[in-house]
Image 1 (tube, rainbow, N blue to C red):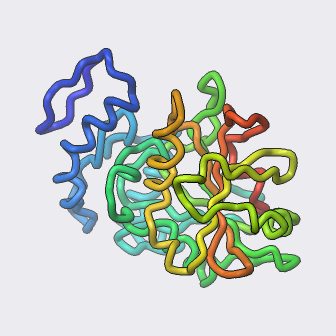
Image 2: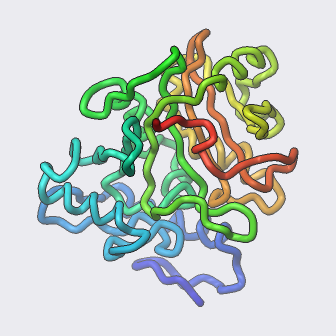
Length: 281
């Protein structure tokens, strides 16, 4: 089926979703700069509907998108509304689980809006990190482990779904015990060069992760989605952003660690879930 985006030409149905997304990205850039998120206005779709969703989506797996629209209309229905994102508590019974959710229709990590721009789209990672250290979404850390931010993949092997909601959300929680210690011990062999990220493998809790070292606090303002796409996924045969998970945690020597994996990791024993590294207690 041919996907049509307003103002964009029809594309051949023989193209893969990844190729289709790349072709459509150029047609959506004008749209990306004109998002209207003020009350009473309907924001335009930011990218190809199949990968990014439509503003008209509702119910079921789009429940978080419904919550965004509710919060936009009534700020008392969420923890915080900024015009750029909202904050919510995660699912019960977890007590230390918060979500940063963009006020744009972005299904998840597979949406090319996140990784087709040179500039960080809305600085979501930086904003999530800052919010996790202040009320109303202050993450209570235990045993000195610190904060962990996470995004789940859409699916793992054989297109088995991993996440339960199709609206981008960054989990803000505690990093699991032992994760930082393992990373600190491997620090000398963890690369700080994005073009080496794909082969910078560290085993954490029995799973393998590609780990990138960000040396400076300001590096969190970079577009981590684009770094992952350009330096890992786009260079991998059959690479697919929909299979990728990401976790960010602090590096004690300064900066951050960015962990990425997928169920089909070429080095084996990968995972498409951020939950293995986060503790929501």
